[in-house]
Image 1 (cartoon, rainbow over the protein chains, first blue to last red):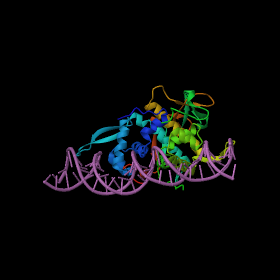
Image 2: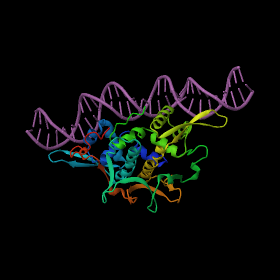
Image 3: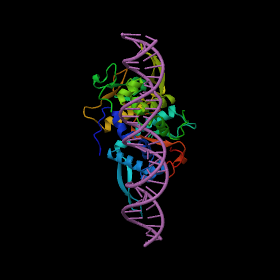
Image 4: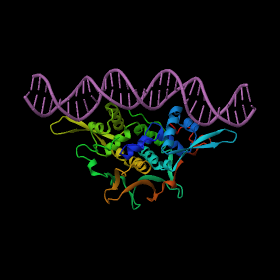
Length: 162
Length: 162
DNA sequence: CCTCCTAGGTTTGAAAAAAGAACTTAGCAT
DNA sequence: ATGCTAAGTTCTTTTTTCAAACCTAGGAGG
């Protein structure tokens, strides 16, 4: 497996690994501590064939690692743990969480908070420039590395998509 | 429409609006400048019924705004533009982009860069504490607002999921 | 006035994916 | 031997998506 992932756009490439139904929820569950098939299954109420497929894809692309474990008095089984690549998704998942809290609020407030371990302070996701200074989202824009990708009539006309 | 969005988890709630196939790519295209049905359609090669459905959902939840426009010598049509809520997704989309660039690289390097408009500096997505200080992702963790949501055997046992 | 053209869709039928339930497998315990 | 359990696979039904064709409203051209 592990196709070379053709898309030119990094977001499209990420979504090819993460964008299928359930995948991001599985990862959220992994961040919440789930490691076993049955835990994901019980928490998410996901069909087992779909879970099996998603875990395989995530392992395949190095987001999760499948490692054996053995409970005392039980047979050896497998656990799925976040790799460093998977752990790097905390910021992406947190960005979605933050957007949900900001724009699709629920009474009672957020159920999960992001907190800095060392200081206990609340944390938000945002942009930081290459000098380490936080920058407002309104002051950030996307720039195309190769200018010919942006035509004036058809934006991103070829190559960027898919 | 516009169901109240039951999920307790903010990520699940966000994904109910954004998590269907194509939705995040449509939004990426919106950030790249597309506003019209035919632009999204041509860029993404998405089936028109699916595009229609996704745009309606996004308008419904206030991520896009559907407003009339008129080209000279043409009939009035509709444009789809990011609302403030939609613009707030730049950070989430950029987080996915950054993860793709970091972990699913393509030769030739990233096709799109995030740059601070006022200074021209490159920008990355990251965590910032409530005193405005950037914090490494390894120093941030999720905390449940109500401790009884985390049992010791079954993590996030009830209510959080779906 | 009538037809063509175009953007912005809707409808229709076929293919792919997900849901839900039943079944399998491997090893430990009784 | 039998049962139990986690971790799946297989099977059938339902839902989504895809691809292509069709529809519609208005402006332009004849």
